[in-house]
Length: 186
Image (cartoon, rainbow, N blue to C red; front, side):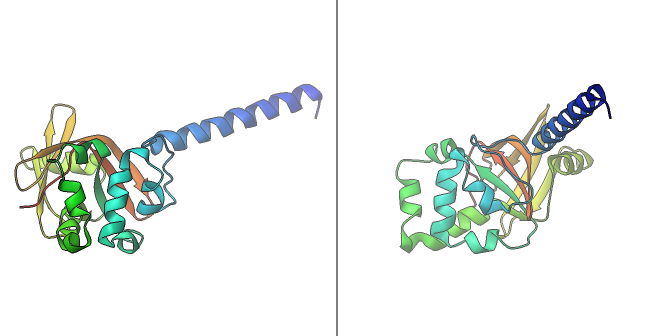
């Protein structure tokens, strides 16, 4: 192989590698300043997101780490720290107390649906049902996916709405959709 061919071949390899890395990145967005890896599970990825430190602390306090590391699959609607800050003063501190573990577990599992539901799945099912798709969470509570324009919202049983701000963060055991507010069970 001549030097020119070797250089051109090396350039093509570099471009192909760059394209593959870019393609993988495009398939799984950054969350909270951290790369999310489809081969890692929900907990392994969430602990790296600066936007989900409150959620991670709550998952640990509720004893749900082992559950969210199982095969699943799970669809998790993951509220950002700012969503927890919108709750009334003292709510998070109260929920994190050991004596409130049951209530904390109820709130957190009201953000989890069995199965691997992409945003495309949610939109398709909502559109097939008049713009709304009802889901049951692992806590037994109800969530509803609603399409509004180009946005997808998740409504809780109390009528509170949370917008999906980052969709389709694929995990080895499901998918995370980042939401801007905490969903509350009745």
